[in-house]
Image (tube, rainbow, N blue to C red; front, side, top):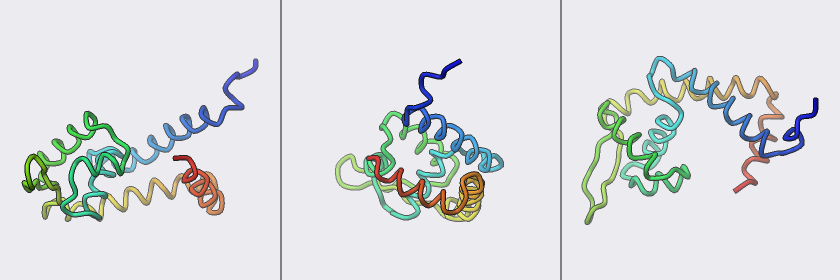
Length: 135
């Protein structure tokens, strides 16, 4: 039987992305978070005082998807909100958020290492270079 999508890059990108997320999310299991939560926390950690809008642009995430993530992370006590000018709210890690980041980074690295093992170190670097070309 022939698979009509087999020669299509988009099909393989989606399939691979789903598998990669499954691998990475499994590493976050005990932390009770998923990749979008970890990505949001990493962006805030690197850019203290960032706005939710800027996070959305950086992660290419719609506001409707980001709002519940920020709310959930705030409820867990990992994010602090500081009023800015007008309706602007600046986000930073709370002390508890900063304290959990080493575990989040370790889980992220473990997931990435599993992916790298599947394609080899050179394959991982080459794949990352190729994926960065797609904007």
